[in-house]
Length: 403
Ligand SMILES: Cc1ncc(COP(=O)(O)O)c(C=O)c1O
Image 1 (cartoon, protein in one colour):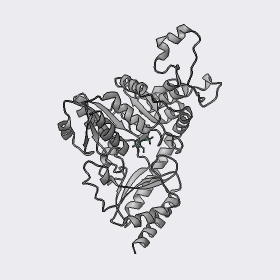
Image 2: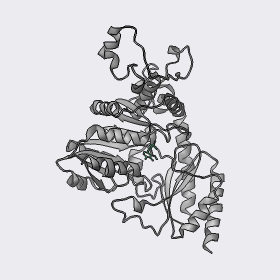
Image 3: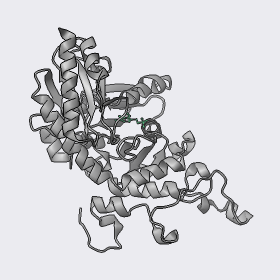
Image 4: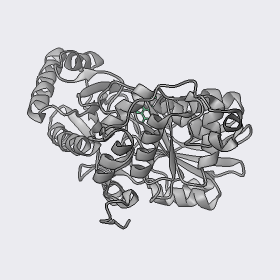
C-alpha cells in the first residue's frame, strides 16, 4: 500500500493514523472531538417528495433507525478503512456477523466448507440452522494443503469459511493459498478475523472477500458491549447489505459509541497485549507442568512461519496444553487465581482464563487428546510480573491438589 503525506487523504494514512482520524468530523459537530450518539427509531422527512425519494433510502442515508444513524456510519467508515475493505456493516454481535455473512450467500442445496477450528457457535449455526434449510456443511482441517481443499469443492459449494488462527487451538491457515483455490472455483471467501483485529491481518490483501470481526473483543476492548462488523470488498457488499436488511439486524448507538471510543486506542492496546502474551507464553513454555503453548508468535510454534509471513502482529489470546493432570487439579489452579477472571470472552483490558475441550468440538478430534488438559488465556494489560506470580501460585495449588 502506498502512504501519502497529504493530510486530507484519509485513505492512505498508516493504520495508527486511521485509528485516530477515521469516523469523526469535529467541525461538523461544533468542533467537538468525538461524534455524537444519535439515538433514533423515527426519522422525519420535510415533505412527501422527500419521503418517497428512493435515494434517501440508500445505504449511508438516515431514514429509519434500524438501517443506522451517523453514529453507525462513523464506525462503518472507520472499520472499513482500517481493515482495507470497501464498506462495513455493523450488527449486534460477532455471532450475528457470522450468520449474516453466511446467509447472504447461501440457499437450500448449497454447500459450505468451514474450517474445523472455527469458533464453536459459528460451527453450531452450520450444524443446526443451516442444516434445517438443507444447506450442506463440511469441516476441513485448518492445516489442509490447497490441493486437498480443491478436492473438497463440489459443484454446489458456494462459500469457504476461514478463521485464523483457529479458536482454542490456534492453527494458522495459509489464507492466500486457500483463498486462491476457492476463488478459482467461484466461491465466496470469508474469514473470522477477530483474533488479529482489523490491525494485525489485512484480509483483502490476502484474497478474502468478507472479513468478520467480533467487535465485542478488541475493538470495544473494555468488556462492556457486544457488536459485530462485516467488512466486504465491492462485489460482496450488495448481498451482505441485503441479508443485513432482511434479517432485521441493527446495533445500539451507545454500544457503537463504545466501539468507536475503543478503536482509538486499539493500536497501543494490541501491541501491549502482544508483549504481555509473549512474556506469559514464554514463561509457561518453560514450566514443568506445561506440555505445549499454542501461540503463533512463538518462534517454535508450527504456525510461526505463516504468521510471520502474513500477520503484522499477534494479539493477547493463546492456548496452553498441560501435561496429564486431573480436572480437579486444574480447577484448584484456576479457582484461586486473583488476576485472571474465569469468563467466556476476551479482548478486554483484563486477563482471563478458561479450561477448553477442543476434542469435543472438532469433526476430527484426533490431534486433541483429552489426556492433556487445555487452557485458553487472554493476556490483559496488567503488569506481566503480577500475572506470572498469579499463575505461579496457581501451579503450586495444582501440584498440592495432586499429592
Ligand atoms: C473468534 C470469535 N468469533 C466470533 C465470536 C462471537 O462474538 P460475539 O460474542 O460478539 O457474538 C467470538 C466470541 O467469543 C469469537 O471468539
